[in-house]
Length: 464
Ligand SMILES: [Zn+2]
Image (spheres, rainbow, N blue to C red):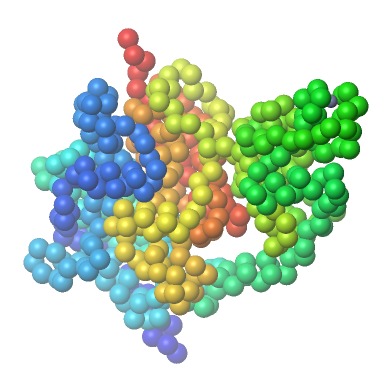
């Protein structure tokens, strides 16, 4: 019987439940440099965080820190300080260390709930104190056998003002004891090839264009009408003199369907067949990708993405176009229950994962070191939960306007965000009353839902 299976093991861990740790003083006061670094990495361009003039004119009266940074201010750094009278470790750290020693060496965050009592301003010095709220019995999960550990942290300023609270739940598990890490790769390898397109002398320009990164649409040399798919003769005027123009790649969904039966494994279900109306006016039959099929809407703006599928030729696919940031505050009475937020794709690159991990001062190796991530049972590095929080907050405020104030952000993580994927956010308004709005959102990648979250925010009163 291993140590972790002994009857006293969990009881020992649970002894720390409810004990309040000593306050940890953040290494740096809230400062514009770290705020800018965070906003750069998260691609959050809300001016109240970085533009002193715009922030001064806003309801904040000056620069504020993005609310989702709350935990980032009190991270302990690359080399955690040694214990001493001024920097005793959090009660949670003792539990994590005991789990490490028992073989539960891998870690993944699963839930967080942030309450923001007020936005932080440069000069605020955060004092945080933590309580272990729960340590679960041993659980079998897709990632492996492990224990969930829940902590609650209270944040105050140097003046004792309570400014935020956070509940945080992680899973500490034994690497290699789950089924999820390996499953994805095997399925992808077994997937049959898509049918090859039939390429003739009349259509070759189209396929050659894709290889060159262009979407080429046939155009009649005589009457200038566009047609797709390509033809041998202009259906409008009968001319044989046919050329092409390069399409911008922007369009909207004209109609769509999700084929379910019969199943074609080569298309990697679930998938969406869409008819896209290009801004040049002609329509193209394609797949709508990087979005939960249920979130596709007629009229949705989409953009071209050229991809090689199964190492065959390149295909013109379409994904939701990133919506522009709303620079005007959304009016309170303009928000209704059921309103949908526009889908927003976020390309998940190695750079995004690493730069956001560092901007949030999270130096866990699984967020930047591929070799170590694999050693710990993950197929690749993956996004940290603080980044997911930051991206959720950005998505909602980009929709609601720069002066919307987030009061609460509660999220649950599902499948990880690995590099070379796209997470597409979507959402809808759950409640709206007296300027207080609750929005349900989720981020979907090719493995499923990465995050489901609810965000409560206050919209500013209408300008005079
Ligand atoms: Zn013609």
